[in-house]
Length: 187
Image 1 (cartoon, rainbow, N blue to C red):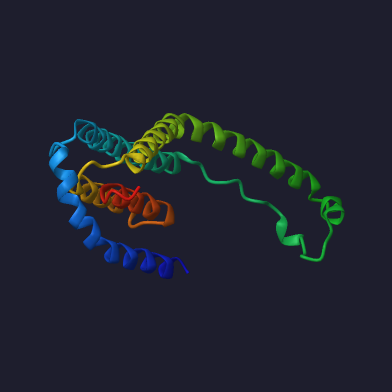
Image 2: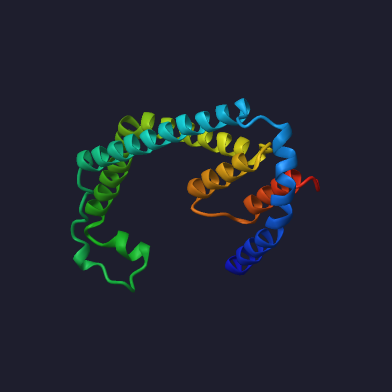
């Protein structure tokens, strides 16, 4: 369904292109070739993207270190006497209930130690990754909302968004077509 919608959107853009190209020279003559606001947005995007990439890499390194330091999970002892058809009460009534209780306590301690280790090793990297993701998203939202003043900027906007998102969904396509209509003097 999404592929069909994207094809329809693309075909609509191709059909609208001649009208936009005819209207572009008139609007291009009144707007400077470079737009400082757009240039600042693109620069801000590259900074945010580099920060996001670095934060993702650092988080990956922290996770690898966490798993390297993570001790083995406690093994269950005596579970060979447990059958699938047994109820919890029957299992706890086994002479191994002390072993079972010790295993549960060891597992609870392991889980608490695991959470503490994860927080100590990956906590700051996780926070940095989340902050970088939020900033990256904010900049991309600003780029999507930006109304280009020239066809050259519109093409750059389309290329930048396509690279950032590996293509378009309907929201992005609607934003692009609003820009095309604006440049064509129809919005």
